[in-house]
Image (tube, rainbow, N blue to C red; front, side, top):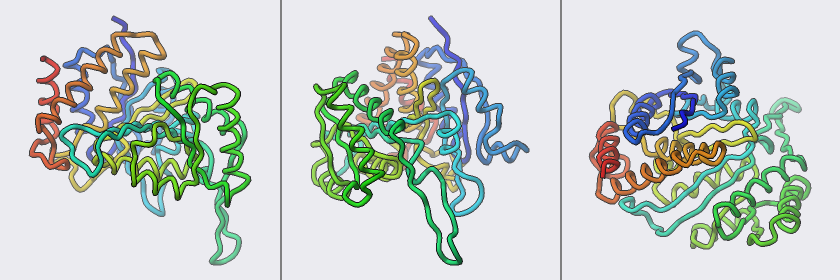
Length: 342
């Protein structure tokens, strides 16, 4: 069995707790992972390092795969988001967020099965802001044909490889005719030239969000620019139980970072009650990625076993407090491990 070296960034707040739980589950599943631990965020600052140390970036560039717990981002001041920095410095242009209904996690909707693909490097997240004069600021939205074409190809290729039905582009090209106009033009060209067999749809984002809340099962793979993808991916998480039950990945040509998409929750850090499911789901995505990139079928089978085990745990009512259950972090991890054994 091949052993894969993976950079582990526990993160801040509840990050180390949920990370430990996920490590235990992967060990119990005999996942062929050797962890290379590094720091980022407030934890790195507390140890006298930069918020995103060079050695952490270098390690990801060397091993090409990382699993990251949540990192704290100050609101309105302080350092910029670790996630945004990682995406820019490593050119992780595709943010991927699968969202599906889970047995044992009741919501207003059932049979939700979506994948949100978000362009990760441009748009308003380019961070180009200026104060024109006192009390007047501007923010520049950036769109390039290169990045728009690249993310469109990624979304269509993913849809085809996973045997999904169609790609729907959410946009506001009726108002932002140049930036969003370029985005949908590149998506349409990609559909017509390289993936005509994949279904294709365009929707103005406000109408698309309304339709999403009316019936999310009418959608399959959503393709969005940066800001829209950020907002809509969280909206979709709300359809199935919140950010604690959805995974996330940031993928580039060379490197990939898999992460829990929820916050660091400092108010419950150290209490042993945090839900490790989102990071565990992200680790399953990571194993599937290793299988795709390195041809390791063992990783795919282990990913399938872990997914089956946490699905069974939830269906059996083994849930943490945020989902209406009574289990703590370690107890939920043990419930999953027990179901790995049969």
